[in-house]
Image (cartoon, rainbow, N blue to C red; front, side, top):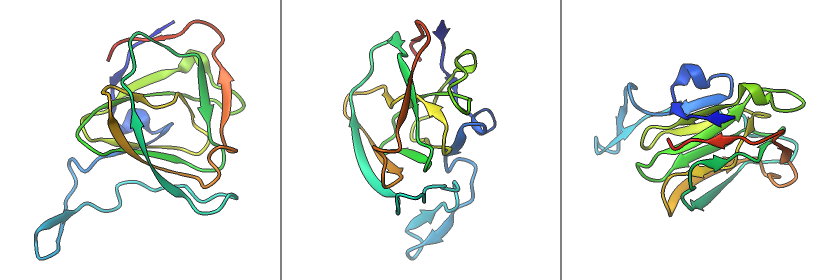
Length: 163
């Protein structure tokens, strides 16, 4: 199976989560007009039995393409948010499914520069697919992320094409 990433848009990504982007939104001027505040860009479902969500910084290495998709993971107790700390793009690989991923419905999206995403609680997804060495992300996730990670191996050979 060969999977080609498509540009992400809010409507197509809705089954998997939310696109976080200020484009097209009206800002509120704050700090004596020196700052534009874009609020309420996403609803974050992060509180679970493990307690309060945590904020981390991920520094990624660029992936080589075609990228083998060998497994997907999910976090049943909390959503997971990825916000690039720069104007870089990244690839999001997701699949619907409850007990296991629906591999035949696997999707790949490439974000616009600076766009973030919030993966819904329980959404099957591939690990971070960065396009540049040293790309940095603020990641907000449930407090017990490690114990809340379930992984499932791919049923065969799946390759993610170059975005």
